[in-house]
Amino acid sequence: MKNYLRNLLKKLSSENQNNEVRKLSSVLVSLAKMDCPKATQDIEINTENRNATRDDHEYGPLNPSEPSSQYWEGIAKKWNATKEEAMKSRCYNCVAFDISPRMKDCMPLVDEGLSEKYGEEIPGFDLEEQSLEFGYCWMHHFKCLSARTCDTWAGGGPIDEDKTSYKWQKKNDNA
Image (cartoon, rainbow, N blue to C red; front, side, top):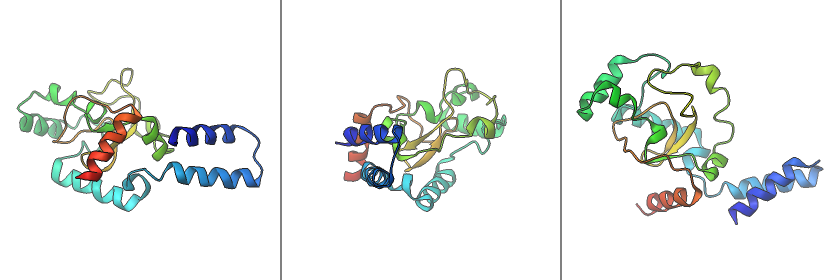
């Protein structure tokens, strides 16, 4: 049903719309987002969860464009790894990082302007191989940046299929 609504919305968006079609489009957007995690729809919840992750799980670095040697050395020590190994363990390859099509629909426009904000070079993050983008963190329930990490990082990601995204949501709903 969700895919049908998304496809219908895309079709309606690409055609000339009158007021009725715009109203229907608005209703379809609301229906499609009904299953979105609360933090993707409520900035206060997202900010609270992000701040808690920063405070309790070292979400960072604060500015991915900076070398942040002290941050990466601290994470490396915690993981008993080298700084170089730690710098390869980012949200973009974490098992809980959700960039599935349905999650991107839950977070429209968040990726706009990231290159301008962070620049063309992020230490230890190959912008030719990885996308600088936001995804949803199923471990800590907030929109996180692919170039960051936290001390609960677990390899195996990202989540890039709707089916897997829904499985993570079901696990979280039942927790």
